[in-house]
Length: 244
Image (cartoon, rainbow, N blue to C red; front, side, top):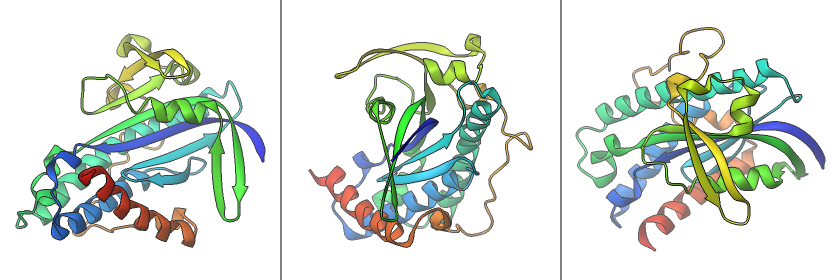
């Protein structure tokens, strides 16, 4: 185990579960659509931003950096910004390719949205066989912030430390407070993606959509065991979220 300073990012697809009923076709298509959309987001990340794990319709990424490294922190923000146009482009392509299917999953793709959560702090990285596990209060806090009272569908929720570490212009952000169980009140900032710094190397590093979705392209980020584990967990997660 080692201790390191890192930016943590969770990206989360929302808006699905209320639409889908217990039918095998809708479940199968939901799995495919979530895989396509998660792929489009993760493939916009680049080293030293690292995918740690997939969690149902969410993904946890992190970047190690030295405290005070503003350039690295702003690169994290630029990558987060690039996730949103990639997600929107893939969502529109997926809607078009599935326009002839009337199942609940395919009929309600337009109801999906992407949210991102960003925090920074000292974390522990534990190696368990081929898996890398992140631990520490920053990891716990970030996941608890996913349950919040932000009224909008698409947003980036930043902790105060994450925003200040990247020297974001707070006049473009909206202040927000969340009471987090067992941790306390958190002073946060809400941003629209376009309020974040542009990604390095271009205005938006636009998504490469192509004529067909390249589903599960992100597999090169994951060990073999984790790839199959995530697909199994995704199927179980869909059933748990929809029918319990």
